[in-house]
Length: 249
Length: 194
Image 1 (cartoon, rainbow over the protein chains, first blue to last red):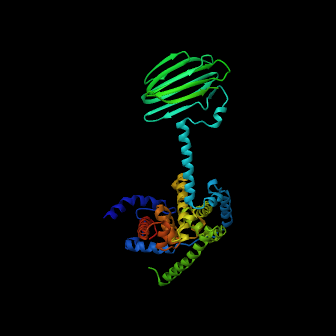
Image 2: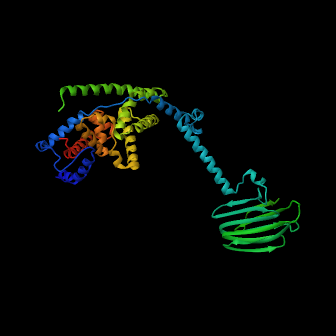
Image 3: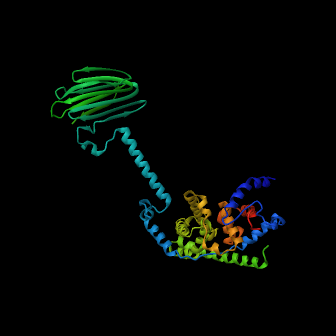
């Protein structure tokens, strides 16, 4: 039944296709009288028979040289990546060893990056940076312990020294910065962002206390060529946790 | 209805193909071991059948030569994926059929169906009217049917071999070929074929 429906549905398409068979004249009465006398099965059998007798025209060609040239050209083009190079295969013969090497290298690189970002570690070349702005290597402070983190990032622009204190602590962190007024002139000081905090200024001394997320900045100008230090002392809950002498050059 | 002679010939062909398949596998493993030149033997053996198969699908001899080259290059490049439980000729025929069908799609996009309908070759001139009608009706079939007709009747493959080449079941091959003959009948009924 379904087949019959499909046949009817496709009959128009079949008519069109048949009309496209070139050199053929089709009319409503195109079928010869013998068509009517043949059953569908007979027609199908006849087609099958003719299909089996289809002309086996085949042509011999010789493209072997062209094909092999193409293959050789492509084979020579293929480059071995550095990792697939036989040297590596010899050194790290078992795949597991290669995997272990990659894992180990990953851990080392990862640990280095963690150290660099957490401790304010600097590259050796950083102190040699030239130009108007450079960091002041070796004077950073980094502290992290029990819900408190404290960081001092100093940098220099021309003869101005910027000391940025970044505090994030549930406890109050008190900072005392002492300097020689004959060597340093205080250009500015104050909180850039505030949590709970307060600050005080004395002669040759700046004191500020802060908790939560705070950012305090001090800007000094070096007035002489002499070498002079700045002392930073940090207390947490009245306990001294950091004492560092900064040599700003 | 097939005669006993035809059955005998088919059996001999099948046996011959089995022997050739074993030899092909040996050549394939040599190529995979790095002996590139062993692939030349496979090329020399199958280039003409592959070419003729492609011609029968796309009806363009120049294009068929190009595609034949591409087929062998592709076969070489993906030889590592060839499964030894398959026959090499089925595998390369499948690559050829796919490449030819892709080309056919491109041709249709470029020139449209009507131009394709006019394609004929010198061989057609030598055919009797009845065979010409059948050939042209085959060209009018949907590709999924015409390819099976080419493999089964022109290439004289067994149902099993056609199934392997087309990566479909033998049952599907039989049913599609039946549908193909039905469609041919319906087209040819409207001509002076019967």
